[in-house]
Structure formats: structure tokens, C-alpha cells
Length: 242
Image 1: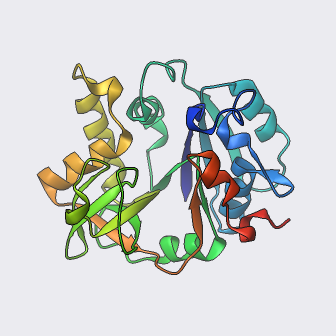
Image 2: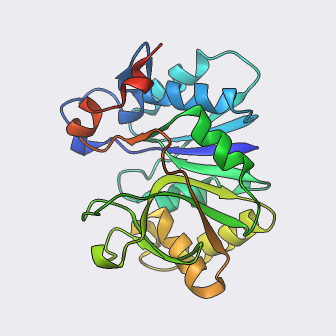
Image 3: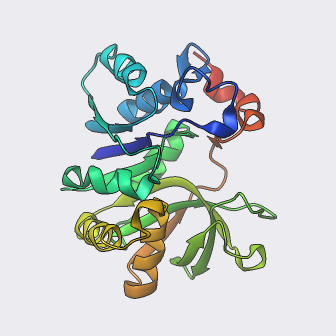
């Protein structure tokens, strides 16, 4: 299994912590957010990772170059990270979407058991969004509306009263899934608003047109999204352990 990590952004909501480094390189325990992600992926049996870089890419490249081990890790620089959202990052690495793969945000931390659950989950539909549930959702949550276990809609703009769950920022593409996603990326990037779209906008479009997007709940597993200074200070102690 391959994984693609979207880490091109600066993380301006984490300033001043990201004044001199991208948020994926913020320290966590004796490593970094990216380091913890890569360690967990390697333990989980992922064979190859592509890290999409942008802000201070050289620092991320240095971090990757320090690694040793069986898992192949490469970087791919997105020179348009300041003027395009991460749908463009996905489009730029579409040639790496040539077989089953995981797609994840560069600011999502996850425990090994969560990854194992996702990797072992049934291949019911070719596109799968990993979800969690909580009592209430706010405007910053990537909210999900469900039709059974199928995804009906996804987006931050989804009204909270229609939300059944939230995306944790990890997707799995199997079988026809990579081809379905590549085709949607090509279609959306040929529109005037393509560069300003979030990568999950394509997932929402696929769900609306084909119904080929499923969900998998990891309720009870540890994960953290690191968008703000408050998020960073509140990272689960599990992820800070060496």
C-alpha cells in the first residue's frame, strides 16, 4: 500500500510556531508531526510514501533524507502552494495514484491501531473516507452526511444539524478508486475554480454523481488534527511519547 501526505501548506493559523518551519515539522516528543506520521505508516506496513511539499520545502526534504528503513519516502514539490489549494497538490501527484493508496492531511496524527483498522477494513466501495463521531460539530469540522454507510456529502459548509460524523483527514482508494479520483481531479482542475478547491470537494462530487464513496468509522481510536496553537498544545500524550 502506498500513502500520499499533503504537507505543502505553511499552517498560518499556527503562527508564530510556523514562522520558520512548516507545521508538519512542529516538534512532537522526540520527533515531528511528519516523523510521527511516517513512523506509524512504516509500522503499519505501508511500503511507499509521497510527501507533497511547498512552504520551506527544503526543511521537509532534509527531514525525509534523515530516515532509514524499508519504507520508501520521497517528496514532491508543489510550486503553486501559495496560490492554490490542495486539490492542486493532489492533481500534481496524480501519476502516483496508480494503485491502491491512502491519502491524508499532513496535520493528522493517528495511532497505529487506527491505521491497522483502516487497512483491514472491508473493500466495499472503491473510495473510503475515515470518519469519527462526536456529540456536536462546529464550522471548522470537516462534516460528513451519511446515507447508511455511504457518504452523501462532505464539507465544512455542511450545516451542523445535517452532520452525522466528521472526516479525520484519511482516505483509502482501492480497485477502481484511484482511477475514479484521478478522473475527477482532471475534470475539476480544468475549471476556473479548480485551483481554489479543497481536495475533499472532489470526493463530495464523486459521492453525488456515482455513490461510490463509503465511510469507515474509527470511533474510540486516538487521533489529533493540528490546525491551531490550541490543537498543538492539546495533542494527545500518546503521540508525544518517544
